[in-house]
Each structure stands twice: as C-alpha cells, then as structure tokens.
Image (cartoon, rainbow over all chains, first blue to last red; front, side):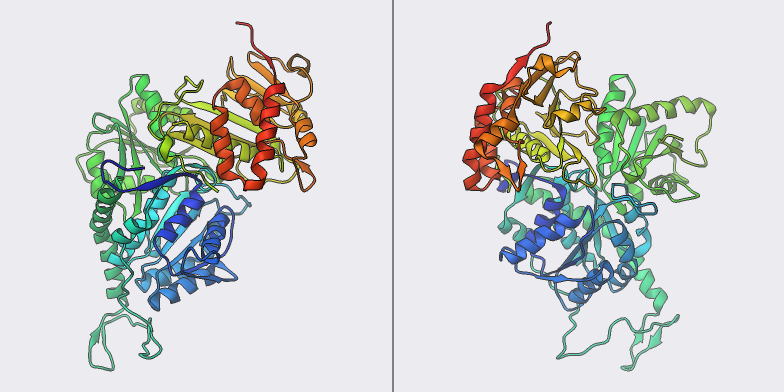
Length: 409
Length: 209
C-alpha cells in the first residue's frame, strides 16, 4: 500500500499479535534473542527462531533453561554492545524479576515483549495485566498496545526510545485477545525502518581486550575511586534512573512523532483520546480494553451521555501532566483495571487519582476491576458500569475507598 | 503463511454483508481446522476490501477431539470489539454431534444462518430457531477426495463451500485466493475441489418471512 500521507510503502498482512511482535523485532534488526517459551508468548519465540534459522534475521538465538537466564543473557549481550530482545508472560516475567532490576539499574536499552497473562495460584493461562503491573517498580518503561499494529510499531519505537534514554522498554499486549487474534497489520519496509532506527551504538562495551568492571558494590555515599575520581553513591544512581524515566516522556513523544512522519501512523500523543472534546464522563482503560471502551462509549453516546475514552498507552513513566490536561473537563472518571493491588485498588486508578490531586479537576472517580484470568469484558458491561457510576453520583461520594468488581460475587 | 491484500484495499466489497459488523462463530473439534476456517474467511473478506477483519480461536488450551470454537469478524471499519462473539450472524458447525451441546446456537441472530456439516436435510436436524439452516456432507466429500491428514478428516475447507453458498458473505474467488496464499502448493487443488463439491451439494432451508 502506498500511504498517501507519508509516501512510505508497506505491505498489509493479517497477523496475530505474537507474529506482529516478532516481525517488529526482526525489522529492528535485533542481534541477540534469548527467550524461554511460555503460553501465550511461545509463538513469538518460534517465529524468531525460524527467522534466524532461515537466514532472514542475522541474530544469535540463544536457547536458555529459564526466563531468569533469558534476561541475564540479554543483559550480558547488551553490555557487550548488542541490540537484544526477549519476550515472556506471567510466571516467566515474575521469574525475571531480579534481572529486570539489573537491566534497568545498568541502564541497558533492552526491549521485552510481555504477552499479558494472569499469574497463579490458581493456574490460569488467560489474559489480565497483573504480570506487568507487578513489575511496575523495576525501572522499565511500560507501553501498552491496543491492537496488533500498535504492537509492531511499538517494538520498533521501543529500541529508539531505549537507546536514546538508556532505559529498557517493556511492550505489553493482551494474551490471546491480541496475541492469538489475527487482524490486518501494515508491515513497514526494512529500508524505511533502517532509516528510522539506525544501527545501535552502545554507550559502553564490555570488551575482553579492554577489561572493565561493571556494577561494583556501591556504597551509600559518593566515593573517590582508584583513579581519584569522585563517583556516585547508590542513591545518586537511583536518582538518575528516576530522572531518566521522568524525562523520557519527551523522547517517547518525539520518537512517536518521527515514526508518524515516516510511516503515517502517529504516536505523538502519550494517550489515545476518543471523543474527548466535549466529554464530561471519561472511561479510562489500558491495552485492548481501551478499544472495547470505544464501543461502550459509542453505546452511551447513543443514549445521550457525553462520554469519551482515554486509552493509556504509557504506564511508566506515568504521563501525569497529559492525563490531567485530558481530564480537565470531566466530572466523572470511570477507570477499568485488569489488575488489582490487593488491599488497595486498581493500579491505573491510583495513578489517575495521584495525577488529579491538588489540581482544579474535581471529578468523581469510580474504579472497576474486570477481566482477571481471561474473564470476558463486553462493551455492554462497561457501559452498564458507567451508568451505575453516574447513578451513584447522587450519593455525593467523590472517591470511593475501594474498587467495585465485575464478577459473580 | 499470510497473504497480501494490498491491491484490494480501497475497493468496495461486492458481497452480501450489509451490517456494520458481521460475526461468525465456528464450532468444531480439535483437529478439524475450525480456527483455520475462521482465518481463511477473514483473509477472504480482507481481500474483498473489508478494512476490519479479525479471526480468533477460543482462548486457552486446545486438544484433539475436544470441542473448540473460533470467531471471525468482518467490518468496513477496523474492528474495535475484542470480547467474545455473543450474537453471531452465522454459526458454522463442523461436527454435527456438537449440536447437542449447550451454547452452539446460542445468541444466533434472527434471520442468521446455521451451517452444519451433516448428511441430513436441514429440516431433519432437529434444530429449531428463528434462523436459516444449511447442511452439506463435508465429511463425505473429504472422504471421497482423500482429504485426510494424520488419520483425521479435515472438513474445514470443504464446509466453506456451504458457507459461501448460504451466506454469500465472501465470494468463491476471494476464498480461493486466501487458500492459495495460506496452503502449500500441492494442497491447494484438493481443498478447492472440496469447496466446489460441497458448494454444489449444500441444502438450504430458509426461514419463512
């Protein structure tokens, strides 16, 4: 297809989300892949190993015995100067937890595709977002895709973001709902991706001819090293990681804009907005649920409600200012979370409340926990939850202490 | 294997879908190819110019012989609905014994189509509802043609003949193109023959208006 807006060529294929992620990694010319198969991520690893086997991708596919090792291999490869990729789900991501900290702490530009799946116990292979939300505080950027096109586009953008700000990026997409559902996806040409994403130039290379020591024991306070240079203490390094994430929003925006200019699909906005111009009731959701929310909002509009949808593309760093601006006209915000911070509420809800605190926006907030362990979430259910929230406004409670659940209890 | 639908983009679909969202639910047993059928129809619809198509398996673990389902959605606009199909316009049943199970015809739209791989007449199926019924003995067609893989009769392509005949939702040339793009060369001819033969033998029982 010739995209009139950008003049860029692309080929439209019907792909499931896993294949879209694998093609995104291939087009990014990843050099090292290490992954361990887990449902529903497995087809990503199969596709990538096929690309390498057939000689379509010049990369090392390193078979490992666990997810912990997979990310250890990627971390090492990245320190050695390679562009590395991994993918996992659920228990696999949980098993990577320690290495997620190591990768971010070492400021390595890795990209990880997280195919969102529920976590046991009890066993469940189906979708929710508890796995990636549980890794919220590891120092990774987290981007959530609404459809398979966004998966492919986001993997490519993720390398440019990661290699600019030196923070690893996790691309999250819903297991089965996206990973196993086929839909049309425009595949950019390799030459165009090469123009967008130049070869990786590492900021540091571990080289046996020039030995260095990384990640030494770092004490609480700054200290003079053997060469007489005053080095950061542990806390300064943590500060710099936080600063890098805080400042990464501008890079994410700029990379999204550049991507749009080249490929005709813009990612300049950190949020997806649907009918937000005149909306006083806003539905907030993340991942594929942000698509279903558009259908729910349409139903509500037909009944005369002024609803809009705020789809969160970026969860870390949380785009506080953007969210505040987007919600400036709202009187009710209904947040659907496919995760639960036990004893508190949905993670997205907490973020929205924090973003609005102390601002002029005085919207009532309602939080619904939905879709855990693959429970289907229909647009009708979402619309009903919004109507229930509107009815509850007469109680005069702006902010309920705990979330409501859409389930059979 | 995927097919490229680039040339079809922007053309007006000429088929029989006049709804904003057309939904098909497939019921079969693991190994019969229900999911592949769902994907072929999605690809065929895309080739005809529908910008929004999705094809999904029933989520979770699938086992040979166990009941499985799949879905196809077709729209002029990108598909936003990600939840399970509740009110299909068409239900396709690859194994007649599944009709006894709850939920196979559940939610089927008034005036929609129930398409069953069966040797009996639609009237003799013993299924009643405000929908049209089509039957075709796809199993026999596959047996006659030798469309058997690892001992399993693979009826998923054959039943597409009945699907096209009854619903006219996608055209034969688009399905042919989709199959040529997906299947290895040596498998194309036999599958197309199965579709053509099933198309001819399909018995239709339309709902009286």
